[in-house]
Image 1 (cartoon, rainbow, N blue to C red):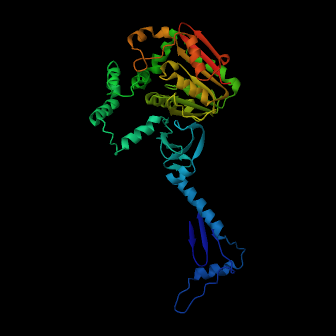
Image 2 (image 1 turned 180 degrees about the horizontal axis):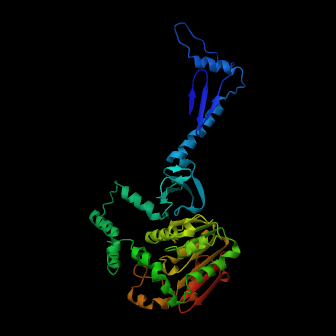
Image 3 (image 1 turned 30 degrees about the horizontal axis):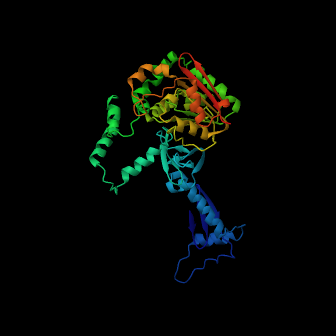
Length: 418
């Protein structure tokens, strides 16, 4: 802020006052005219200045300091327009549609670099065409549907002549989908009343499943040959560490079972846990916040959670050192897109580690469900040759793929990007 008078300029910035007294060459001594009162302090101030060394700030310097003071003040009170302008470009995250790097800006009152409350800060992730949102204490929502749903919900000029009553019913059913019995959901989807329903995604969007996942559900995978989370983590770590990776992605992270281990190992600069399910990500965040090692600030690894579709990964090409997908591939509706995206985001030499089930584990479920993505509960991989073909179709070379089977139905995939 600048306070001006005919005899002095006071510059106020960042809580300190810079007192600048002009010299006689630029300002005439104050003269009392007949019939007026001359303030004595102004006369004394001018007279005392003649015996001191003085400095004059030119207009450009004053303007620049004023701009800096304003920027500092806006940063303290959380001005949105200024924060958007100065948003930092994330080195990994990208618009899921255009793949353009995202600028990230926090919004809200920030004092001393910290949020003014314990509810986290709202975050905007911006590309040229799209803006996505999130919170530092939950996750970043980088699903394409977020943008599409916002546009559909605000379009008041739609004259397509569609059945608005059926659309209204669909909206209601989508909002209460979790309460619709699972056997009815495929029927409603086939009739067009519940559009976009995919059984593979449906199961893990349920809060009850996210609650149960680390409370017995995941431990049950041992019957298929999964060695357990601690042993699996060591296998992942052993495969990744020779690269000395900086950024590791935990795709389809669920409740963060491996995300937390990858972060707590302090082996990587950044770990990004990704999942399609909001329920899983919220459970993952709760577990991160309740983990003393992760919440105490003693871990050097930066940990982010991102909601996304593995078939449309919101990351820049050739940006990720290593990607893990534990017990996940059998839940991906579009395997071709998923594997192509994983290959795209990995750096040359980057590594992919995945575990999944072979079909024998799902025989009972497979018999009960129908054929096709619209009805299947899971992807059914008959053998390692099928898995190898899927990974190769994504862009990995045959000689860079290694697959082994543990127990009766646990497949471990290791692949490198040439």
